[in-house]
Length: 264
Image 1 (cartoon, rainbow, N blue to C red):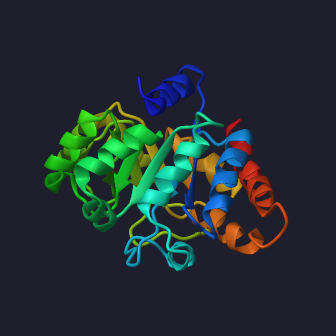
Image 2 (tube, rainbow, N blue to C red; image 1 turned 30 degrees about the horizontal axis):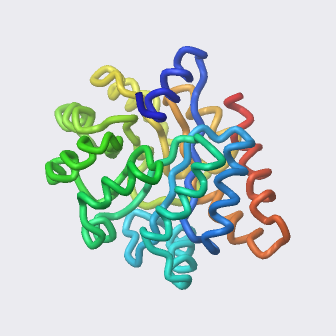
């Protein structure tokens, strides 16, 4: 059983909801990311999305775009990210997924990418711009090396495609709670409850909800409907704010601890 499946089985049996944090690898440097991953595990984050920096992150808002730019300025690449995760695995067993675009994976080599995910302790992958309809070879390689494939459902996804996305997904499904790009928002989609009820009537796979979630109240509200809550931009913004301070990664973790608290 994968770490991701074990996590969601455990959450369900304990009637709990999961907290997923997104951070960009190598922002501001790879050592900071490594320390932050371990610290986030300590304060109760259930699963981590590790963003692979990319020059054209079309699904990301300004905060995460800037994080990618900072990481790319340090020449962060997949090889360094795998090496960092291998070191992290000596200290933590927290489920980890890579959050990426297709181009870095294609350039790295699809089969080698899947193999290195398995070898270095990556549990799953979400490729933002690779639709399941175009994913046959990707899914084949990931299955070969027992790495979970996470795909996205949007507010505009119809019932037939929800079923198709679910069939292609392992680990969990990522529900984008609003159209547009990532970024902190003050409101929650009024149709969120109805949309998640529809998804859950079609699939029994866990559904994580992300995009626009930025404070503990929103975390608590969304946890009523989804199986896990994803926070990204709000955390990445604190990385930018605290990264030059001594033990800045601990200050970021303190912020995240407040977000996690409603689920514990």
